[in-house]
Image 1 (cartoon, rainbow, N blue to C red):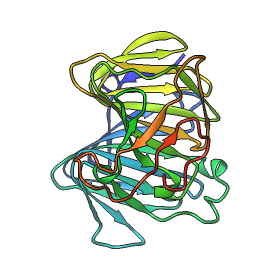
Image 2: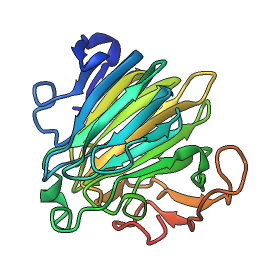
Image 3: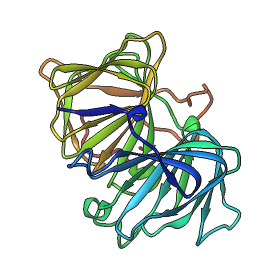
Amino acid sequence: MAITFNEDSVAGEAFGVGVQRQGLLTAERVAETRILLDRLDFGARSVVPVEVGPRSLAWFQMLGGSATLTDAAGDPAGIELADSHVAFLPPGFRGTLASASGAQVLFAEVPGAADLDAKLASAPPPLRVIDWKREPVLDSEHDARKRIYLVTPKLFGTTAIKGEMIIYPPGTSAANHHHEGAEHFMYLLKGHGIAHANEEPFPVRAGDVVWFADHERHFFISDGDEDMVFVEFFAPGAYRTVWAPGASVCTWISTGRDIGGQSPVREIRSHSSADRESQADV
């Protein structure tokens, strides 16, 4: 059965200077997980060290506020981040993350990433930051959902992980399915709904973490009066999606626009979620 809990139930601890850390996905809470997940709440004039092991990788998503990411081996001025940025941190990264006025950050690490992507240790990709609001939006062919890719081989140069944002307008549901070859978790950014795991329903709301094991059947229904939005991440990033008998295989249609309705920074062709490998433009 899926493991689910809300971040409100997780106690925080002091971390760095002026930061509270909540350990969301941990080995103690989810024994099988390859992914470690924290929520970091930065106060004013706060800073934490960021260190990624030589066989690991990490990424983080800004949830609110602003921050500066400094690479110890790169630009000493740092990279300015707003609430729409996602950062990929390669193996061996050393630096700091600081906020002058406060920020909220979802921070994840895959300690054994080199075991999931044989090229990662010998040819690690560089530090990369994207603005998800400028990425292309894809529409579901069979329902009203929208998808925005956040972590892909095209964006971050590794198949160890894959991530995306899914938007469910009110009343939207998806077909029952499961994944083979990867675990994954979801973090609900907004709204609420009903999740099903192996046909057992349970409620979900903003701030929930839902972790699914490999082969666990699942689907979601948005039952509120606002969009239900979540981010989901897979490890490894190459896996197979299997749809329940009679279910429509999800196909994602290119819209040629970003979430603001403008031309995106790149293009993605239409494709099916049945494909095991990511398309070259994803």
